[in-house]
Length: 627
Image (cartoon, rainbow, N blue to C red; front, top):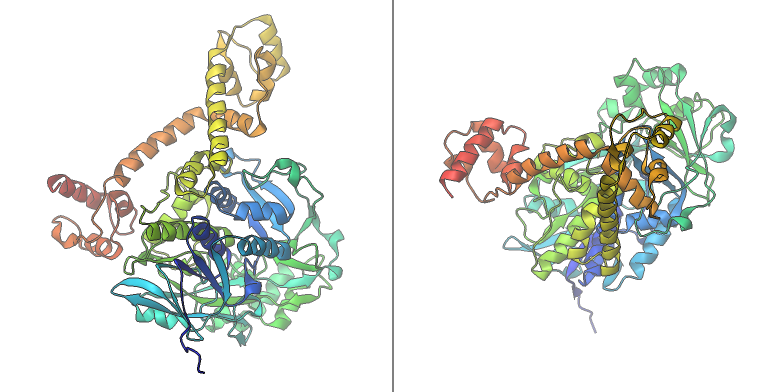
């Protein structure tokens, strides 16, 4: 009896890829009740961390907190598997404080896989998706390399760095994905045949070295925080207070730089062997040395890959130089004189899309029901990937359910900034999140992500009633306490004068309220509570919000006013099928760009490169005349 050559199964949602984007997309879709299948070229690569062994960092920590507030998994998973945790930028204002945690790489993937395997409605399948099935501009499913068909109402592409991947160092070139895993070689042709515009991008990773061959006495020890703050708002802080592993800091020097310069012609980056565009904000060591010739040294962070291994990651020294040059340059660095390489540094080239083809919902403009997230969209980093995967998964599920899709805008979160930048601005290199990219960073802090985004997560269905009620209770406590403090007045009495003198604060000439005292840089809610006869026992996270909201009140109000102006432009919707040749007075470049990007609002149109404020004025007049 012959078997059916074309196995055919039906699902609501197909997710292609099981990296950080694929994991979040799959969990979101399945948790929202949709029958979901997640494809991966290797089950062992689920939630793999092929580059740096950490989650978070400047601005990226904001993204992880936002993922958590919306009901995603990344924050919970790193809380279970970190080996060192640190809040960065504490010497600066709260807008740029960012949490960063070193992960035990193996534990991170193991724990995420455990969650995925035990999620209802979710099937994991090791197979390579080779073709998208599209009928009349609508996705109908996927076909695997083995010829099996999987019907679906929506598909989410999260291919990461696997599409036609090529790993390179020196003149060695292997057609594999990261860490020598199988590449996905067939899907690109299917995408191109559907008219999808592709880019060729590059990223890189440093060598992994044997801990036993490192002399740590020549390096600066980098310890974790004494008091660990968890990533997830749902993690009990008491459960993450544990013994931590140290990282180490050392530096390159003139000898290192000379070796690189003398061998630069052997670098595939400079010989023309690498075609892909690399990330500007995460350059290889050869790029740093050649482009910043005035710098005498560059930082090198030595980071453990986990508790189970002696492998150490050389942060800041990614490279695609030949093997012999790698040994020579690494051994000039203090503490690495006798270093033994476990895995060579390499560059990886891969196919990704021009994200201009996406709506802010991360659905393709030209193909209904096809979504995408992560490095496939031209971004870099685990956190950027997870954020996009979560939004793509949520919106794919909402599309299948026939509900309105969500858009996080620039005033609501870093996720909104990330996606808006990808789909609205011209990106010719891997996009990296930075705090400087956000216009509203004073109100988009990592500490208030739950207060900003839990409502959206709850409305979608990923945040439980119980969790949402906790957030609303926190909001009420903050508001009530600030109101109470504003109502308590103190005079210029001897007792108050002594208190202020003791705390290095200037004395009062007239009466004041407690909120005004807290606003002083040298005072805080905790210090001023000494003057408060009715002080309440409040949770630490509530006190933190009270301090920030009172101290930065003027700045926050100013930013909220800016957000109001921004919202007015976002609310002026544009027809995505409109032909801008019909608007007289627009410059030719603006017509070309507007017809190319098809913005959804005046706000989005204003952020397109080549569309001037004068063009926006013309559009606003046109809209008014043609209501």
